Image 1: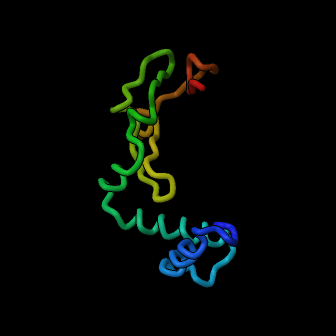
Image 2: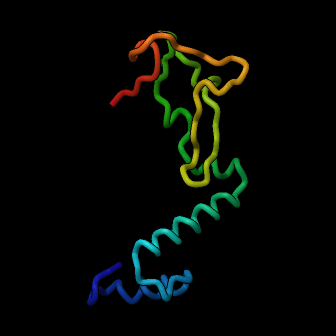
Length: 114
């Protein structure tokens, strides 16, 4: 919230009133309500629109290997659209072809580049 005396304060407070936050002064409560409204609006959109507003596979997953073999990112990651987090991708989501690893370490399981 802009500080007292800020030229933006009145505009900010007027906008809060227009959005239904007129009686709220607690920033945590305002933020929580805004997040709830955003989640509700996102969940009302068609799935294709929600997916388009979040990261795609190629933007989020740069590289993948399992048991020293390259993954096929397009085929081996399943999309789940969460209203809070957007696009989520699950590796090894096929119920009939579950991959198992019996060895530990970055060569045989999950590895993230930092």
